[in-house]
Image 1 (tube, rainbow, N blue to C red):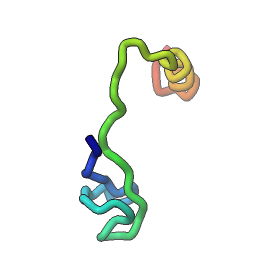
Image 2 (image 1 turned 30 degrees about the vertical axis):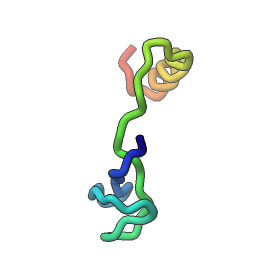
Image 3 (image 1 turned 180 degrees about the vertical axis):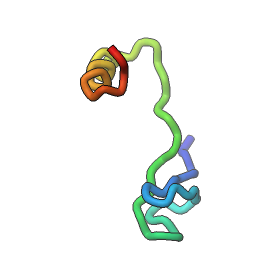
Length: 58
């Protein structure tokens, strides 16, 4: 299944277009979160990266 909804990276509006925002012309991103898996083999690396960036309190 492909995601159809897109979100503008600048103005934050949602659209179904696939290339540029029809309101401001900025690139679009997919607003859906990545799928979660309990057997995630990269979890420790993402956790360490967020901890080093200060997004997770120590």
